[in-house]
Image (cartoon, rainbow, N blue to C red; front, side, top):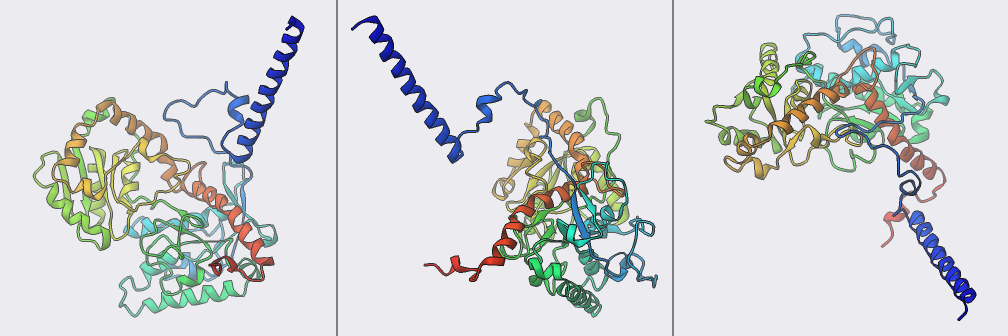
Length: 440
């Protein structure tokens, strides 16, 4: 064979191989197994170790907030006031400092305040209020359902619970008369429900809405789930450790593991009683049964700041406020809760600053304490640094601040809206909405 023929066959073979390679890559991109950016952007710098991924937020979410009388929200903060006109930015009250544990469920207050704040929008806000509902991406219902439960008959048998019941009836009447609620079936409406007993009388009637919850411990999957709802942090009740700049934080925290709180709880919370027995007798472990008085909260804050690890066992539900108290105290959380869901987990990797033990592991005598004692000092210091770096995401502010908990929550709401729009648009044209459930 001549040299010319060999060159021609070589070129043909190369062209064939190249064509097959292009077809394979094209098919892989089409089915989603190959990220084309890895071929064309190989030299982009990697983020530094431990850095949280940046969030491309885009324009702020446009939210229409219903003008509800004050009895549905801030009127519960001052029950002596007879004022019922909807609250404004000028008349917005501060959260009372003597509210005790009511504060942990106050997400509804901070979300409402973020919409009332009339800043110019150039402050990193993820949501702004619009006065025209036709312009809204989502609708906020400013009913303080958690505060209502805590205020009107906190005990289930108290006759005052009827006030809470009536408020739920009244707010559902207002929503039922709204063409925007009717248009979407409530799917694009945001309703904070951070207390497990919030809206307890009529909660099934708001199943379709975007619920702001702290976990899913009390309700079936059809009522509340990750696909449509947003997991919120509790509002921490201890003071934030704002000047945690000790040159040797590991040595300055002399307690290995700290827990202070109620030990007799329902459901998965029974693990607390068992842990009290497992953790007894260790000199470097502080496990104390207590109730949340003002003095006990202050004492807990100081002890968290002097502890390397803070224990977070499940309570009546899988989560509790103590996890977020630990985060703002920069005490590495030790989470013992098999069914816990965590806020902002699409943006925050909790394994960078928390340790996780299953119930089985935690209840094995000596195992958890042994693991904590062997935990490397350099890894603990890195976790402590991570806590310093991310704790601002768990702070609630008025006015809202960039990347604080309220703005993080609104960003989570924004992530839910594409699925909401799909459901709304689909239901408008389906003659048999649940046809797929009827197939055998």
